[in-house]
Image (cartoon, rainbow, N blue to C red; front, side, top):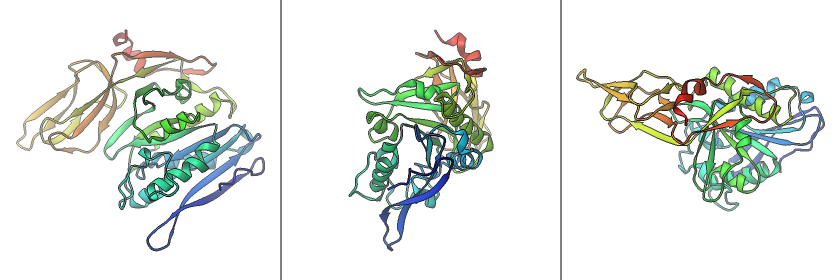
Length: 338
């Protein structure tokens, strides 16, 4: 059982055993607790549900170094590495079981190791939180714009205010899958926000800092830190996901960056075939670049860009008092949004 009842103004580091491996060694989840001036609310921060998504790990470690508990109204419980076996493998999944932890919630007490990790994390950490932020990144070679990713499933839809509280320019709203942490926790009445920052397998200070800003915005928005959150007065809720794939093999050269706004027909980049011929890749719709491939070599059919079209976009207004910053995507995209 995790230790939550610590003294006011203190920090605690612990770990819980969740399973045992072939050689008898323990599978243990490390965690941090920071008790502020009050016990409530309890904010859960977690990272590395996929073991190679590292920026969120660093966000949590830096926040625990930087924050003074006596400036916090509430308790922070943080799990920097949930999927410890995948983290050791330096891969998205544990190399032995090869199961996606973020499809296994709420887990099984008597299941395989991946299901046991899901079970203990969900019952020991998620159920004790009032809300949380689940830090993610794009897969290897898949650089993502910082954004909240709100998932629906069947008759379940998350409350968007929690996603707005991150202060990102856009929120991606789409259908998820059974067993995802955000959906499972949401159905239990615990809003856990998926926050995507950067790409897997490498640390990037820009995206780490964006992650820290988002967490602090969230805490300020809900009164856990003093001061006003810094966020756009209006954010864009986008649903039109488009995955662009290579039509030929060769070397991919991107001509856009994440967060760029493009209109239909704009050049996203080109693929130079080994015979020297260039094949240009063009946007099929008015959209923003949510993600871009950072691995240069491509085969036919490889994904090279991830776009969010402005079809069916909604503008979300911030209803609380905030420190307003520019929404650079909206400034360029408003003409496309009906």
